[in-house]
Image 1 (cartoon, rainbow over the protein chains, first blue to last red):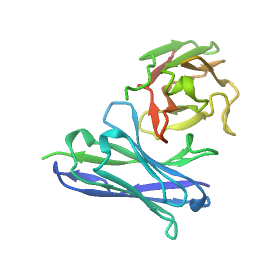
Image 2 (tube, rainbow over the protein chains, first blue to last red; image 1 turned 135 degrees about the vertical axis):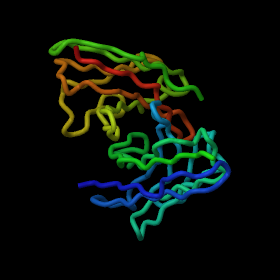
Image 3 (cartoon, chains in turn red, blue; image 1 turned 90 degrees about the horizontal axis):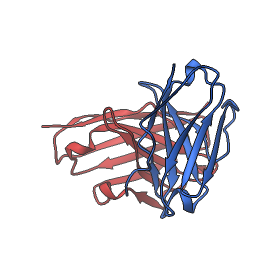
Image 4 (cartoon, chains in turn green, yellow; image 1 turned 60 degrees about the horizontal axis):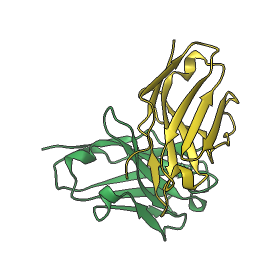
Length: 119
Length: 110
């Protein structure tokens, strides 16, 4: 069965950095695009970034461009999100998501990891 | 980009049908047949219920159906059951390999 397990969340001061990881299992990781999304406390879902199956193409929502970097290591079945220059508004539960049959449906989600940006 | 527009809440009695709308623009919902819907129970991760406007993943009851007309997509849940009470989010491809979510709709089963 497909499993996505995020880690790396925590409390970080504004302006600092954090790296999230997502360990994938139960499917051929190297064949699917992968996404990061987030949900601020009590708020709705937001899409953050997409990386192609081979890591060669990366796409971001405008609010994180230049600050966040999505990447993957297909030899380790792991997805990453490097977050720099963190702001209070980046506080959220961050979800790792697997692309479905295309790139635009998210057929499996991890349980999420909470990132709190606060001084 | 602004979030897609969904009603804040809808409600229905067990056995009834409800429809949740999701309104965007010709640059997202209206421009592509890549609308998906997600169900989220409190404290849980979202679950894919509908993709590519009308397709249902295996394991999702056929009580859930999707449609689209112009810039508005809809999720219809027929034969409401207590376990359907949850938050529902639409999501659309918005061009340039980006996705856009709706603000979410809280479904209450009376």
